[in-house]
Image 1 (spheres, one colour):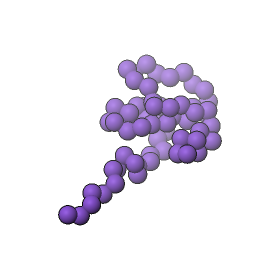
Image 2: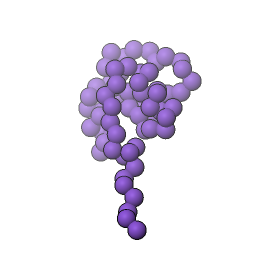
Image 3: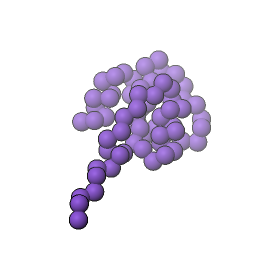
Image 4: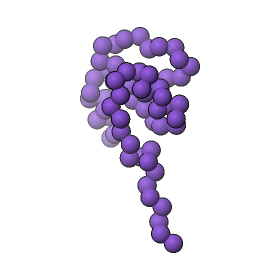
Length: 64
C-alpha cells in the first residue's frame, strides 16, 4: 500500500495581508501567525491567531 502524502497543513504557507487572513486560516484548522508590525489592536472576531509576532523575525521563530 502506498504511503500517505504529508498533511497539507504541514506544507502550506500564505502570507496574508491582515489579521482577518490569519483568522480565516485559524477557523479552518491551520496553525497561524499574524505579524503585527504596526502593533494595531486586534479585531474581536471570536478567535485569535495561534501566535502573534511584532516583526518578520517571528516567522523564523515560528518555523524553528
